[in-house]
Length: 124
Image 1: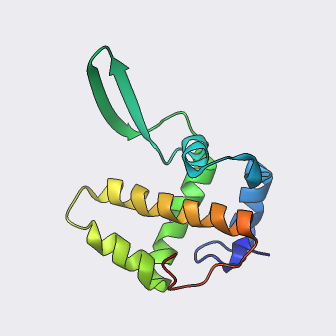
Image 2: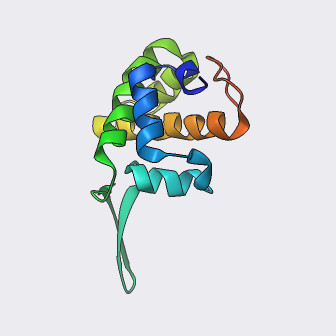
């Protein structure tokens, strides 16, 4: 199974992702998937005023929690994810966790769309 090649995603989480999200190919971009899962920032806009809020509360909370938990394993085992995490250290910890979880989500979408297993330590 391709999803199990991603650090932090084991058999239970992989089956949960597939059963809750179904076919991941239906999402045209990472923006659509991140918005559905809840790893995208919310925006409040009125006239000329634009405010960026935290993560959207309209989300699939179970899948978001799967990727937040997978984040911890990813930064332990993948040096690229660890470097990305360290690059953002010193900022708000929760927003950094969401950034890395979103990066893991985008790599998960790439694994599903391309059919190539995840390789630890590969940048692109």
